[in-house]
Length: 261
Image (cartoon, rainbow, N blue to C red; front, side, top):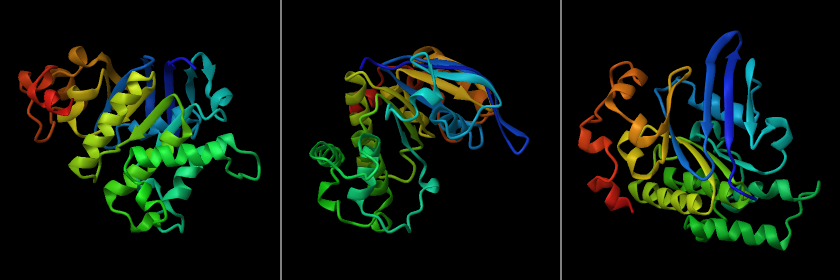
């Protein structure tokens, strides 16, 4: 299948009468890595859940290659890596079983893995360097190992769209670098990737596009054009923490970018 485009048109999402996302619109280009940037509570996770069909928008629509969410929900087209807070780490399941969940869309009702499913799981675990830990219970893993496991589940699903919600939170630098390199490899094979992150310093190193969000989409487009001090000030209410907004850091092609590639 060719690379997938996502169109979000005036989407509004409300929980218990409180608006979490208002009139959000953007076009996520096929075959790109797009960074989703905003404060906690800005609507990033809500946007992910709307794209996945986990929440029903009160208004607007989301199209994946021109099709509504309900038409693509069971196609394994979209893979999702949730925040750690959304996972029950006490559930007695192994690393291998978690990754096999990414293959459920390819199985029959009995969910009996075929050889192709077993092969996909092994390949995914090997790519994130977790094959040797396949029999470990997920609750026994470190933060980085947990992230690798759920990233492997997304890889095993073989969807052409990847949504990653704060995948670098609580991980070591080795895991972060490995995941970024894998994301860049997936982009080369036509995957469309939307990734939320608080690591502003790494945005220019691997994101082609950026979406800035604060209860609505404030700006989106090419990283070199959108990821500016002025736009970040709007996004974070004039505060971006310890991140320096020096021009040299916001421009592509800096030293940090060279170290990642």
